[in-house]
Length: 519
Image (cartoon, rainbow, N blue to C red; front, top):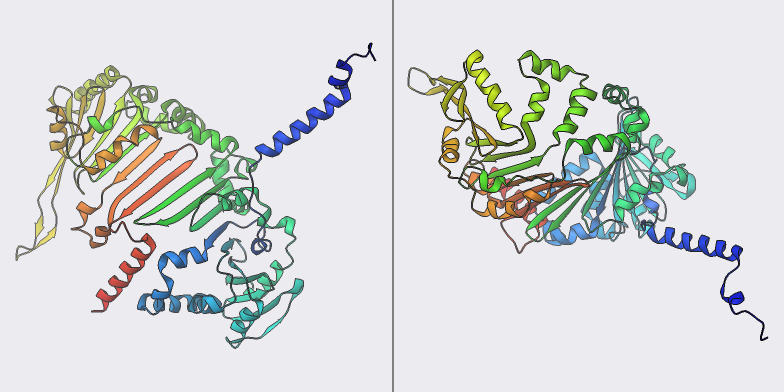
């Protein structure tokens, strides 16, 4: 015992080390994998070739809309009448959701199967809590149901619609052209689970995402059977494999006093690489403090990558056509790309007063071209760094009673170069402000812009309320914000009633509008 070495027991043998490494690797791999939502039985009958799948959280939407108090209103009755035209089954479910047998706590799914030869086939999949109650609802529509495959019963004779159901799910098929709905729906009952859209990892990842009321998932794969789409892809130098497996997901959430929406891009391969080359990660220029002074109703910024645009648009996609076009006007393509930095801005102070701004990368080169344009094309210099390149003025046309038949035109398009920025506007007063040093937007929109524009590839902010005198519908919208980064886009709309759910507000607004139109 005295001669025994403790390291013999502590140090694993080579084979044991190998087993330990395999076990650790497996644990790490499993912990890094994203947890996917369980396969929903409602989706297992939808083929993987589907173009789109929308998920609707039924009870969640009903609660937010205040469903029980809405059922007797005229707007809801009108919706039922419209639903009846599309699908009698859907109308019945909407009319009596709690007694229809549908499991309102689950997701309803709407999918679209596209075909060049047989037309579109829309399938709504509804989870069932009570097979008997749903069957009684179908029988109340004076249609005959017969046994079908895999434990389903199926009923046709519902116009362009058919319905099939078993203990777990009801499938409502709407056929737009081509074979009748019953025949098309019956074929779906034989869909092998492995060939269903339920096995798509992108879709399951989207379903397991953050809270939402409605989610729409789109696949690029369906376009691969469309010759026109494939031809367009080939013209842009994409192979069929480059277009396959690209996905877009949009979510909509009705919040208290606001509507939020996100669009996620799940792109890969050359398509993702090309899109990434168009933009830089964020806008570096402080357009908030450099724009003409005032309170704009719309403000947008974006960060383009001029080198990437050169490689893609000029060299790859257009095969030199854009360069030839520009050089035909005496403007070398390389000079255009050298002049601009890539940061741009658009601000609107009302429907007519707008200004475009761009950060310059080579101001001296631009001034050379402007001097040449003065000599050869009659560009008019108004003051140092300011030029007029278009002026059109026509009088309004009136009839013999003095009524205006056609409005006149008064366009005075000018550019201003100042502090490394190019401003372009058909409202000279906006350029006057910049020239006098009256810069920096203010007001509610400016406060929102300060925290957003320099953090995203793209930002667009709007305050529609000042424009409500042209459109009463704008009175309920306080603000509209949008931004984009590498992963996708985000939208948010603030409504006037902060303490009421936005879905309920929209429904009540539609009800008021309908009542007013009937007076």
